[in-house]
Length: 309
Length: 309
Image 1: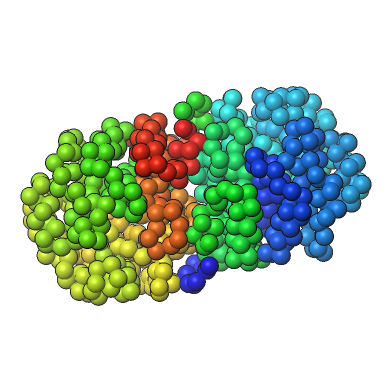
Image 2 (image 1 turned 90 degrees about the vertical axis):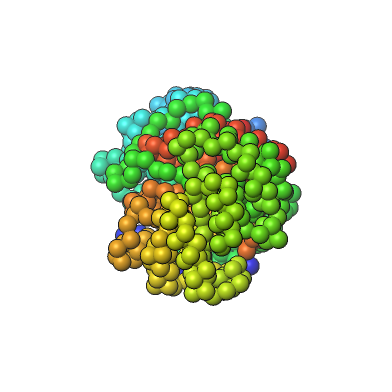
């Protein structure tokens, strides 16, 4: 329980409001070994919204062969009662996925590209160029239907097979995705290896070619404990959309670690301490994560959840 | 194992070298419920030095009634083979503790003060002023004997009973400790609640009254996942001495959480990614923490240790 008030101390040149893109139900649960029943997922999404979230990435239409944890996507979407003013993006791998999404009246989708050839081959079974060709009609059709399209770009700061990733290559693919019609681009540190110099340099390079801060979200994994610090650097560069996962749900399929995404609670503690508005009730969020992780029978990796429960 | 090279990307205006003050054997082990045998502690210290540490806070002369985990201080000091160029500070609560330290040829001590009245009463059983009076002769005698004196200042950013802590009060006590002869001052976020605005503001206030960056160390606990980010802010303000605990050993006696100090491995990953020299061999350090935590039979809270083992 939050018992004591530690006040707020703002820093100059940081945004006044941040939008958190809550990815727990999708990026979190798809990387957990426990499969959560659909009614628990629906309650999870509802509680996240009740805690104040306005963007909750809900599920994925990737084939269940690849992501069995989210095989109930259609059923989940029918069970989630959509609240006005809240976005519930769904991951969509191709045109078939888009059709399934349209049939469920999804208003926001996300596609996922790779910044490295090795990960494009392993995750999408095609080259970077081929994957961009696959996404182009998905993005165009979605936009024509008035649907927002988030583009995930994975492995922006390091790749477990290739090591260091060329910033020039990341900038090239990022601009291709934006040119293709993505309404937002989420820069992913999929394996959590990034440090602040990389984040700062990539954002500067993107700004230099005309990308603006409000087109960019950042998506850090906490595999090496760097997620919040990298997020802070992005805030210092004017980024106002930050991906995080309730309770730090997730895990990293490309490292031996159970550590997942940046934990939303640690992020909210950080932002509220800086006087940055998120619209989120931290106590409700902590209770939601503690409830879900308790259901899954494991320890919560979010420090703030451990401290407040 | 570190299999892939992710390169280094420096940021302007950060220091080129950082001295890590390794507090695992003292601040870490004193807050663990497992009592570690003296020969394991001696091996732990030796392995930390072998991994490249040049400052290892080794033990404490606080009465065993209060810190039973470190009741073997004298025996440990006789077992630790001191390496030239390495400092092995020992916590000393009063003149009696100083005499025990002098008898064991200790060359660096640390005293511990509180930034709040409540914690001074609870931890030292006296007021802030009374505790400073108690430390004054300890500091003076140590300095006269050519011994370095680190002053810990606890609860600089928040107190579990008082909440927000007045920066003016912290600055006042900090300058008193330096005026009394402390050679270094470690600003402690004992309960891990701080966020970057507080760190930045306190450092600015200290600089304003003439304290210099090389007199200051920062000591963050990771109770709310903020430790590394706060450290980064301190680096941005020119601080070059950072306290951390191998494997994130510790725990917080004033929160329900098992989370301890900033984990040294996560700090080293951060600094090396930024191209900042520490002199530490990360792989050796990870193996040391994994070995100790394995001996203690618990999970390692350091993300980097989990990722690399």
